[in-house]
Amino acid sequence: MNLICVADRENERVQCFSAGLAEGHRTIPAGIPITSAEQIGRVFAIREKKHYLVGVTGRDEEDQLPPQLFVMDMTNGKANTFIKGIENPHSLAISDEGTVYISQMHPNQIIQISLPDQA
Image (cartoon, rainbow, N blue to C red; front, side, top):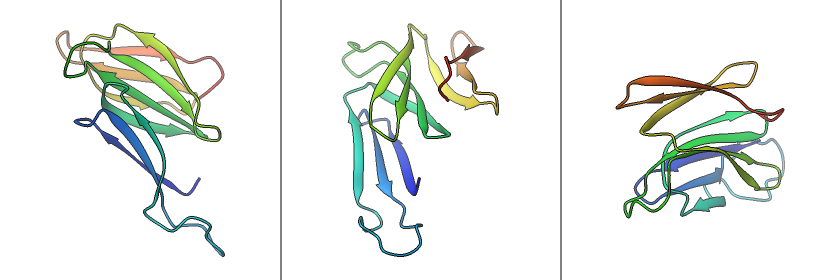
């Protein structure tokens, strides 16, 4: 998809930039932000699977947004929340089959989630 996406935990956002990897004419110069999801809570981890960006957030600084797992369709920028109430997420991984594994701290555990036909 010619993107580099960054989880910016302290500013509670995900930013995706043009990577400049596409051959030929570039409509967007490398390094230019092309999408940004803001005010979604402190983003602890993101992973890409197909054309989806899967992320996990922790509590925001004001403790108003609950931790959640979200999936953003990178073709249209729409995001869906799939699970709320994760206690202290720290990282995530996605299997080849699309199963999401979220690691938590306090309690120390790994949560396994199957997403409906997306990632």
